[in-house]
Length: 118
Image (cartoon, rainbow, N blue to C red):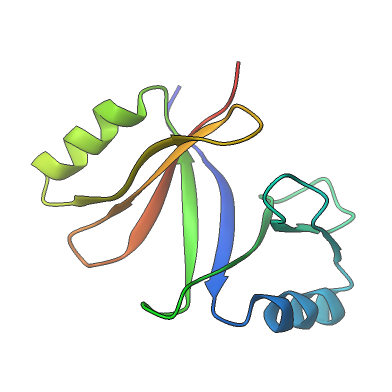
């Protein structure tokens, strides 16, 4: 079945400003009515991959991050580490029951691993 990219997000120090920019540029609505206050874009089109904006702390840099759906986050983290990656944030349960983790690939890019609540 494979492991599809199911979400993307912009991680930025200026989350409100960046979310407003894309909202106004593409006429996307911003929905932050969720337990984490995540700024999800609503494009008004059924095509494409959903995304949004998440604030980052003082450290690091702004980036665009992809989330790949997997059936075993811990297994994929171990596999990534065996291939030269490293775990940035271990598996966590989100308020809605979904699970996610972040890893760093050998090029230094972060990617999310995601398992939906079943």
